[in-house]
Image (cartoon, rainbow, N blue to C red; front, side, top):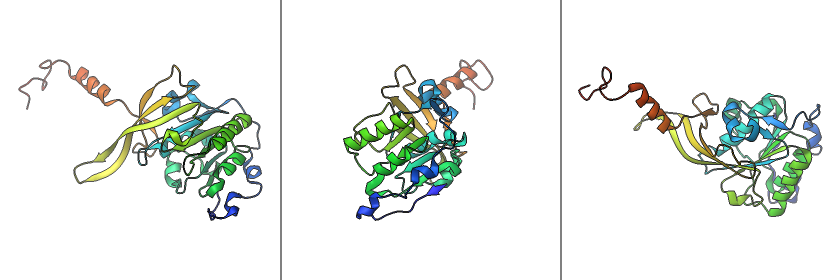
Length: 257
């Protein structure tokens, strides 16, 4: 794992990043294939079940709803398969939780405090790694968004943009993932421990045609990893089918205690 210290965002020097940053993490093997793997629970969100090189994916959600978990999880299978990844602008990336998601921290560059130079740092990293996750500090300028989108396409790297609102990235994305309603598992009325967060994820964007439009995911599950979550309505229907009609079996009738 590489990590670079914070700079003074009010100083022009904060726009600088370590010399030779891209060269330090440049892959030693040529680009193989046009896609990067994603964890199996996330495969239904993507055409061909993988993250396509040269594309931009936006991940949008309110704080605490699991968008950061989802964005980091997109890097997990790629890093585990040997690809280099970078994370720019996450002040507290939570490396322990990231490792629980499956991220190989030996192949991840963290730039937590890029200051005003976040776009420049991300642009340089797109030249040397396979996937870059960025979190803009606010609404990105259209010129910066277009430059990074074009840079990712030119360098055949995957760009993932973490946002609190879709308007913060004016260029849009090839694929847009938005985290909606969430529900925590494992807590009762004043007792218990948080064990998992179930979230609804909606898929849209230019490359989403004909794909799953919405699914349920654990972000994360009790294991710390991202897992698929069965729809509650499906669970209720399945349970009803197993029970059968009222009175059909022992304990199913109205007299059952």
